[in-house]
Length: 54
Image 1 (cartoon, rainbow, N blue to C red):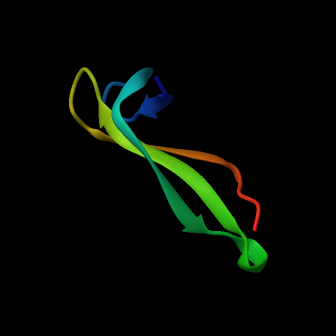
Image 2 (cartoon, one colour):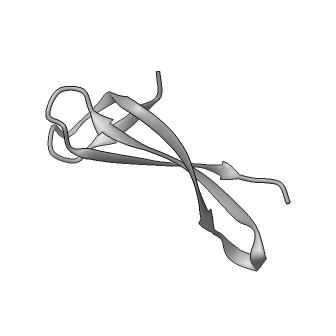
């Protein structure tokens, strides 16, 4: 499972139902990120990953 920081719990937690999304980056590049929900409190979580290749 993917780990991310939960702002509500103030701790690193595992993501429930992680999905990969694409964000705009500098210079026309795409930046990948993971989004999901906190297993404990249900808050939406977001983790920015590395740069995607064109």
